[in-house]
Length: 138
Image (cartoon, rainbow, N blue to C red):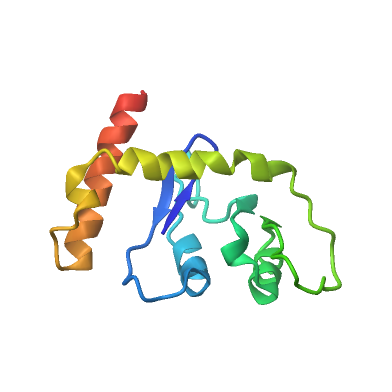
């Protein structure tokens, strides 16, 4: 799972087994964000989370709001609307930045065909790939 900024550059990463639901890993992935500042503690809380319908869960939205994060997650079809703040999907059009980041990772064969058995080694190769991607961007 990956958290990116508005340009598609990675802020947080979590590698887990494929048999876990994405919604159960979302909070752990958000906890990996640490953006260094010039002074003081690193930033660990984004202003907004833009995610797809797989993350449409009332409890997850409430936890985001409790942390002061605006959730931009569309609701699944056929679901009863819950009481609470209305969903503003103005930022949802920018979700393609995350998909572009995943497309950048597809350029690295070692990540597409996972040769590593351990998640820790695979995560290390993902980090190396993002270092190379960031070097290309600047």
